[in-house]
Length: 372
Image (cartoon, rainbow, N blue to C red; front, side, top):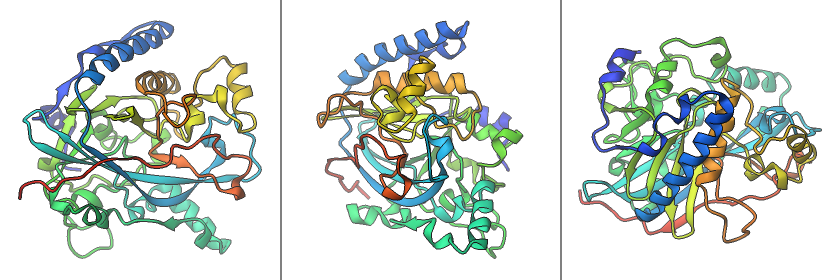
């Protein structure tokens, strides 16, 4: 990869603002005090965030349905008959007013399934499913991220920012382009969104520099190799992008994990892959066998998405941060407005691991075509 940790440190986001309420909370010690500090900081920031205004539009699109081990989905709390559930990967298109007064377009989670298939975990799973001749049942393609924007009247050239909550199963060369060919291809890839910057946390970028064995199965080898440095917008901590939209640093699932935070007419929405369903953030209301009971037994208020426990305590704190920021749903006030970027589907074949509640997609405002 061409970007080194030293270079990453020098890349300063031009249009992002730090969120001072969270300064230092992830370093508080001991760990019980850290959780309290994270919760209190989120309460303070939420109050200010709500006063700043709302995004002008946000639309969600389902990209692909893919298999996922059921034992990971709810930290092993759930009782499962089928070893796999199906998760739905979502992509969001968000428009908002930047701090320069101009309309900005952010595409959140434009997953390219062909790239995800090359991550070690899914590559091995694909080989296994082919041996059993069941691979055609494992993956269902729903929308091509390359073709979503024209349905909104936009071109891919209109996108200002791209971001993912983390870079598990992402081959960023297929999204951001590359200066050298991907293995097995004759020419370098052109960027899917030619004018977009990739917003990426410095610690997430640094993971590609030296992969730990506990991280290896979920990252695409060479997934950042040859991605041009000038398309990266590297940040640290928590940042605001513009009116009504922030990226909150939520470490634990990965070191550089961050969550989308948007303000809408229905209040604050949060999106990440820290959990697999609303049950994950509110296990006390879950009807999935085992989840409520286990969470209560251990006196825990969240149930982690547990495929990579890079730091489970941090992930726990991060999910508390998310649920403290989120508003309650007008559809059902018992549930917080947290929508997983990869959500456990409600398919009967994976019974009894079926979410107790699902928000569905997001559809607010009207997308406008920027001046070209």
